[in-house]
Length: 163
Image (cartoon, rainbow, N blue to C red; front, top):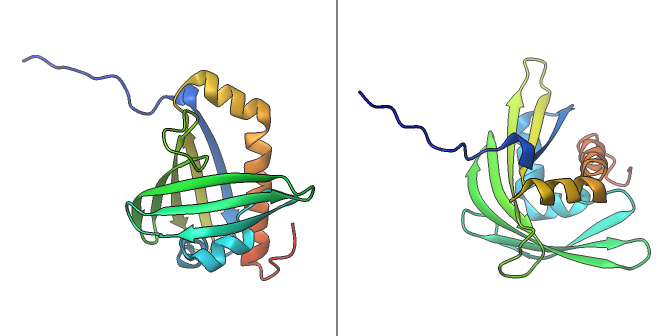
């Protein structure tokens, strides 16, 4: 019997992983990610706001939005949804709002319920290359992700204005 193995499709040297325990049931956390009005209330790093331009949150659909900094600088973004499995998993491609973005990366988010009513959110970014992942880390992707999850925690706690 011959066994064949293929190259792994999830390379650890190309990923960034963020984890957060959130004080809310996973159904509520999942809705915060998949309902445009909720997402727009918190989905931005510190000192930025999210302006949603188009929301088609379904498999194959796209979310087009801008991150607008306090200085007025705007960063256009596009998310294309690949898998939506309420309330457990969300998979999408994220990049600039342009076709064939070479910096496009895959995001897989899992929502795990704890017996105490809290949710463990694990967000995995898979970048096309190690070099692109390293560049994103150098740009501050981990810190940006952490402050965005801080905004989510504040939103879930009932204070969306907190950062």
